[in-house]
Length: 389
Image 1 (spheres, rainbow, N blue to C red):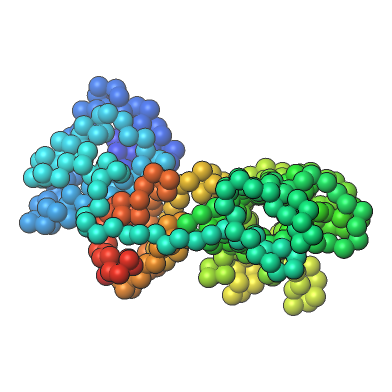
Image 2: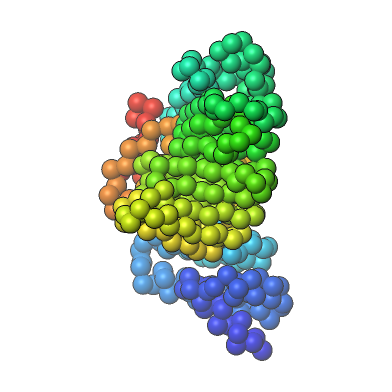
């Protein structure tokens, strides 16, 4: 006889109310013979009822089932195991689908439209202290206005000479990354930075011995800061200042987004308002696993515990969305793929979605096809722009 706990969790799974712990428990116990049988029975019954209630809209029933499975997979709450896939296939056959689970789940499926999007080309630009701009491409040395080599580049990364000077004047460079690209940067103190698409970073060519270590960010970057107890590292982004004690963290501050976010992976940082209304510094201390969010409208800072891998996945070529508003997903896709997306569907603009996208392996057409099939979001490609209706 099947334990009541398993039965309760199966019911919660089918109603999309199971917690991650309950789903883990279900996965661990689903291979038992008696559990397999009851699981299969519940799925058949569940969708028989759905068909009866929504008949003749079998397309909708299929989509709801697939969306449920896909959401759980995307959340990382359900590892796809053979038994679940097998029962999913049985249900799809029952509801008349030539649309098979395998066809749905294959992320490398071709897009529904034969029209291809040609991504716009952009260049990584380095601006020197006098305003002169250099295009970063290929392997070559980077020279200052006097012709002295200050860094080396291979086109995907820039490495500055590791040194601290006795000079009193700071000389700044500014690195700007266009949509569709990202770049690695090693500063002169050894601090490593990965700069995301649509971002820029202003930083000293050499850090001064008696001065502070401070850089200025617009957009998004991941920092792995070289520790120095006597010289904390600062990242400034408009109204926010992050004080770093030697650590790794993600900092996101896109101008078009309402929130500025700092996610701490390791070490210790504090988020500070540059100046409050009372002319006092407000400080929020973060521990590993914390996310601090500054709302640009109400000027409040909130702190929550998060899965840091979601916020750092872009470094490895992935976009991970969990309960993310569609308007934010659109902007992230525009930045990653360097495309223009026009959304005319006002109904979905504030709806939240789950998705995991491998930007290095999946084209924008495949991503759009996924949203079309799973979430029934229609799109067309017009004059190299994506138009969502």
